[in-house]
Length: 189
Image 1 (cartoon, rainbow, N blue to C red):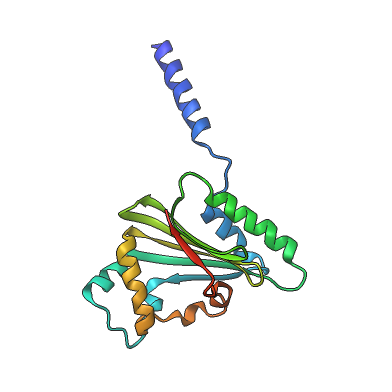
Image 2 (image 1 turned 135 degrees about the vertical axis):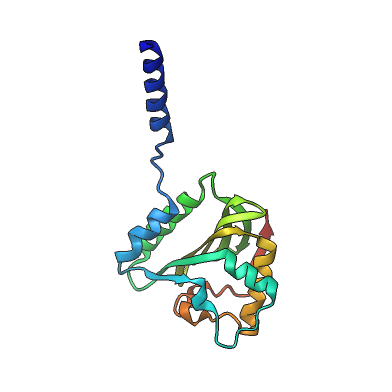
């Protein structure tokens, strides 16, 4: 009986030690930047993105309902903050290099680019992350949280921006960082 307790205690202790991870999560990074004046921050419920004249198809409504929340943190380049910019950009890249973040798409050139990553299953995404950077303007991280988001249907929802059904005014100021001129190339992984 004592041996069983010892083995159980040792097993639980080793599980606790091995399950602790010293790496910083993207969620923690975004939370830490909420009070940092160097960053622009926006947290939105997707209901705030619907314009008054929205005319969604049933499929678009279902896709939009699969997205629960959007977190955006951007670091605009201003004056002498280039060193801080590079440090913060490297932190985000390090976090997103972790194995749990799977690459869906990369595009860009030497001075600007974007990476689309996700957690969950390829056909049932729980977290979708867009990391975009421009060496002249700064970087931004968009984090979409939801339940069983599907990438192919999310792309169809993007057409709603063109139709004006999704109100992107909530993200004003951050979009300038992401203007990706025509010199970008896409690589799907």
